[in-house]
Image (cartoon, rainbow, N blue to C red; front, side):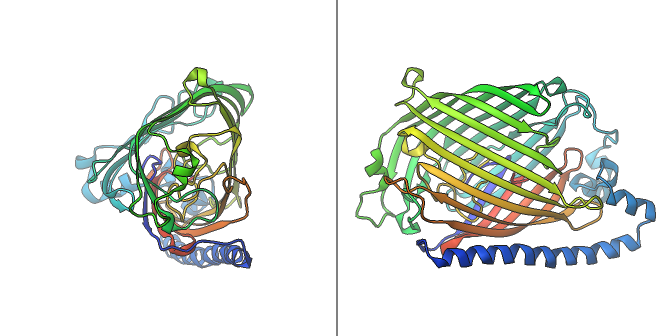
Length: 445
């Protein structure tokens, strides 16, 4: 299970290793057909719903809905609760436009079940605000998603994306305390769920970056990154390989430390990172870990995170979003638990359709696309369809020769119209019977 404000995974998995054959291409073609088929079906359903709603709506509201959405034309969960239970219970609501210093808070308690956690209680929260005039500065966001499980596991992630006056500086933070047994499946693209290996540990992850604007929307900066694992223990009860795991072969230790500096290049012209209606995002992070900073050994990596959001027509708020995520080891030998792996991006969202850490290797390459559309005219309900692929390098050959596709669909419920925060509930399928729910407060990417 990972966290994105709140992020839950609920899975049902059966063993089925993938070979690099024509089956891959058939599955990729099926993904394409699935996405466009669902787009046509659900969009036609949405039109039917909208037609009924528009009959009871005057022409001025129709025109307003066809333009860029604003707070007054939208409905969120708070509006629904106020209408149902009255302002005495939920108070009066600020109806002024977005403004400097106003905090837009979203909180979503949840109870769920996953293979990793058993039953878990989570509180997902994000606070959004503008440090300067909303016309001159991007929306700043702080996310917090503490989780406790009946297995006495704790997760406490805090992620921040702060923009200073006139977008001169961008401050990015990712702080996590993690006490959580992780199931890994070995190294490379030909592993199966029969290779499941439970590794328990505690983790402190600290990553802080300061970026300076060079020209509008373009930033360069430096940061510090620490991944420290301790009390690492391995349970081989579910492993069918005779007790020798890839963790053993790679180099098992009871502690591991990766400590280094990062050099960062960022281009971001999205005005709302919670739910971008359009724009580009490119983040390149070079990380150099050194023993003199406390790292177990010297090693280097680079991350390319590219996203593009297409607003398809001027009369619709529907968005086509594309995400490319590439994480490469350049030199040295990272600790086993710090290798590129499924859903170990900042918000643990990459690779829907597969459990976190399902694939691990020196290099990871992933691509995802998602079509986001409205269902109700007031913006309360929306939907998505998506497809993704990922590959990891084999070990020790470092060869990539297997592709793992996924696909899915989901619903969006407007949680806070002022910050445009949605509660996101997705169901995704992968190969080999891997499938399950993903829940987020905010969009996946």
